[in-house]
Image (cartoon, rainbow, N blue to C red; front, side, top):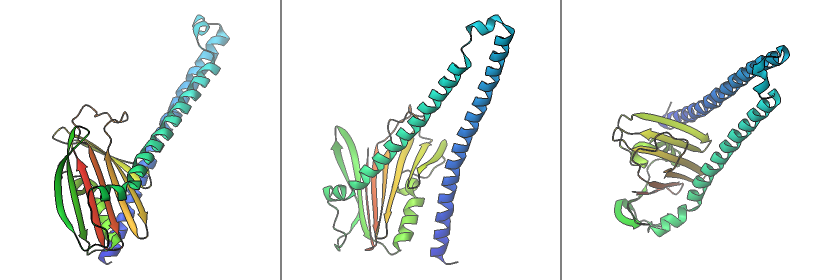
Length: 248
């Protein structure tokens, strides 16, 4: 097996694993709901028995239809919340993707057909009262576009997101959609890294976008220190790699 074929195989295994993790989460949620329904059915059976025997406890109990209705409403609310979350995540990633060209132009990146390159240029700027460091890089790539995509995908945290490799206190990878996933990590330095990552591919171009989610009610580590991160990476069939990152 040559190197290119091996990388393709590892990439397929990676995404298969992520999809399996997501399916396992759905399975666990389904099992929880089934167990909850069984518990409620047992409670209902007890209530029916109490009503038949005329027990005083049944006089203050809710009718089983009311309980079933409350359960149904709870399921609807949870389902609606999940759909809303997915929509919000997709919107953030899509907006960043559509802003790719504007961001690269705003920060002075050369055109893709330009011979000019940028070798890890850094600049400190102020955005809305906050201090950010902007990293820029544009280089000719020796590898194929597919290999470059695989490399970026495998180093989203360690290199692309400026997160040094170290033993994390906790790590969770949640795939929300096929091209969008989220990393949630608490580092030994008590920093909470909560990155939304989107991948947008065409036959001639691939763009990765990353955004730190600062306010995420679904994550239990909001009390830890956070840094805002925004990242755009573009690989082109023209043989040019472009990356830009703003980090507080």
